[in-house]
Length: 364
Image 1 (cartoon, rainbow, N blue to C red):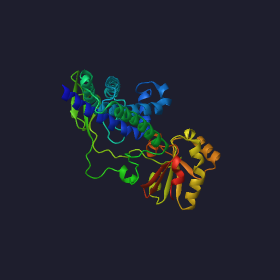
Image 2 (image 1 turned 180 degrees about the vertical axis):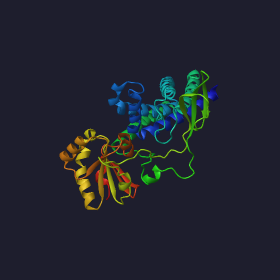
Image 3 (image 1 turned 90 degrees about the vertical axis):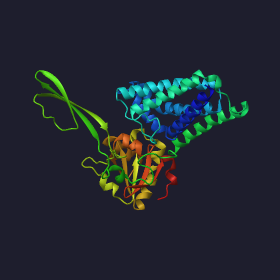
């Protein structure tokens, strides 16, 4: 039993640290995922949405710290009980999401690793079993150091986790796992390469044959049945290749300008998913930065999901000399984890991006 507990301890501790650190690298992204869970389509606890960022920071810091606590053997009862309660909650959440097909990606590993809802639930069930082993064999969880070093390591893990979370919120994620990372070519991320696996969909057709409903399964073709058509249900067996970027669009009131702008050699995009929620200090920095960029030959545009009236008011209030174009809110949030944020492209390739706190450090 002792060896099984120690193996479970090592595996669980490392997994919690890795999972927590990946989310701690991008707490704003995890908060967007929590908002999705809190929404009316999933848990219907929308009153928590304004607190999603705070909750995300607390959860991911706690996740990392518990992993460290478990590995060093700090306060075993507190650690194991906390792990048990946390994994029970997440197991319920991922089951609910998978069974009712509410959230397509749980966000367990941020943008680093995408899991389907049922994969997420399976992962949590395995973790639940491991934590139950720890719960039963808690007497075998001993500190690996003496009291003072163990306490210092525990405290440092908490302080460093908080500092790192604050740092990435005030700047940008230290590691960018998204399709808009520096060095990525956006047009290439939007196309499906030749020979890529295609989606496989199963069609279940229902017909009334001789006053009896019968079902026929095909891969899409209409079955040749001597009966009255009733209905059809589809089920995706394999999604095939899905481009990393699927819904980026840059639109004016009249046309889609996505391709036009992505072909520009010197393009700066100011991202503000909602101009009314933009950080005032950050928006105030845009005037001098964008004016200087335009003097140096850059095309400057804004991307937002906000309406025309809000865009016009922002331009007037801050005397901005560039136009804002319509883009889906979720996409804008994904491009740069800041409101406002800056992304610089050369013929569709990302050459730089920055949080509004770092605008002065951008070299044009």
